[in-house]
Length: 347
Ligand code: KG4
Ligand code: ZN
Image (tube, rainbow, N blue to C red; front, side, top):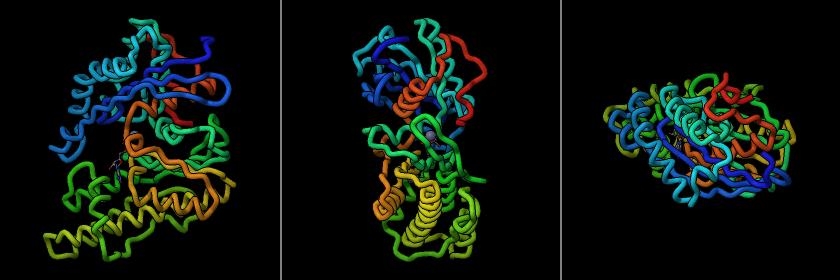
């Protein structure tokens, strides 16, 4: 396609949000794009009943929502399918039964309207969400911290198109640890926002471990921290008071933050990074954002973090990732076809 601007419809169904978004941007020159519309239909209320996601239930909700969400995003942008150049769709990683709803829907739409597909990696979506505002202010090399429910990664970016994973979690992801500790404290699903809110009332600091902080690598391990919280809780008389829970929430949140900030700063210094980005669901955590902002200020690093709504899953980030992938040379998949998925692996 040889046009100055492209219009991308993005679909995201990797977990428990049915989302669509439309982006219009330039293919040559500096990256420049506008999000014309974005719709997220969250299934949180459904999954609160079971205290977590039941994949089959999530997939059924995606089936119900995918068409109205796509229609709504087109209406909001005042566009028709004929105006769409590419359909970007999250092809992994995620819950397979959820992913399949989005990818099959995108294939069908592409086939019916002869629109090529851009299979897009969900984690690349989180990565590029940090560039939603003014991407040109990014100075390279950059270090990206991606902290979500399923992943914890440190990535080194040479530029917008070349990056590598330099560290990741060896067991639980940061968001998973928040969710599991929330369950220990009888807090509602999803655990991250609940812990974060309760932590604001915390007073007494409990000395939980900072796993892997002193190790000479950039990997993480949060499962030991979760177990330390479990042992601490088990030793207390039950039921816990509200204040005890708040102290645990604050101390746990501080431990996670110290590890992430400590590892990220070490990596940024070692690789002479100019910019540090934070994204993924856990990037919605106010304490983590504030700590990293301060760390960056003190170390002369530009700090980029998406607005709150862009941290947790959405399709805007998939549209942005697809836009950068296209500029970086990704070959679109012909309408209706799905080949062995090039976007399944991040790098
Ligand atoms: O990126 P995301 O929406 O989905 C995945 O790709 O996994 O991340 C969801 C995760 C959940 O574990 C949730 O508890 C966590 O992000 N989360 C938070 C906050 N908001 C969401 N964790 C800590 N503090 C928050 N404010
Ligand atoms: Zn995600």
